[in-house]
Image 1 (spheres, rainbow, N blue to C red):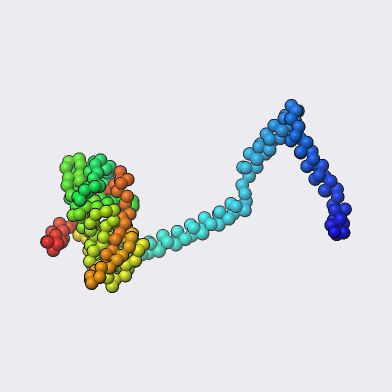
Image 2: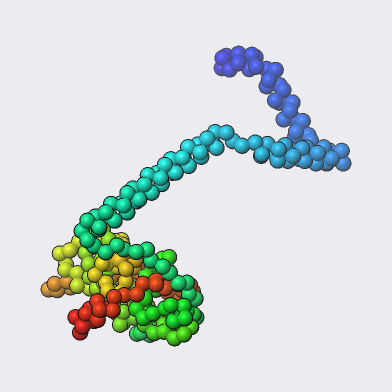
Length: 275
């Protein structure tokens, strides 16, 4: 206790100043005369003005930290871009050495969805582009989210797209992580299934499923969706792989038609083999 009194005695001037200031503020707050109101208004305006001025002064340390983080992100992205460029160059070189065909960049035709059915067994969308815009049968239809379907009918200015949620839709697909492949089909509901996947193969919930190189219509690598769950029927050779499509068909308004004309001979052979 004595030590406390010693400290109070040492800093008594500061304590008294703080006490008087506190008493003054209390008296000012309890006083409601016109002069006091004027002082309050002037004080608030002055503080606000100072805050506006000081607000233009950047926080040096915050900007320094943000600049460091941005440099790290930029460096990481530059490294990833460099690796991607190297991979593209190496892929081209290997394909030339092996005598394989070069994969040309895809071109797209934007289209608006002017008609849509989602509650039938053979669901489809109607697009406001047709043969005049270069649309042909079996061209894939996509969005930035992933695969929508393919063109099944065309006129001069309109075309009909068969979507994933259609009992007649088929596509070769694979699990990107484990490279397990199968056939994409729809059997009702809001999910699709990857068929012909042996129950011993590695497929897990959350795996990304994309179109595969075995497709005669769809270019490889187009996102389809994520594996929702897998199950096995007793005695069955194949597992049931359920996939949630990455495209929300209920909100579909704008799509892109991939200007990719499938090899007609390959499509004919694939269809013969399917029947």
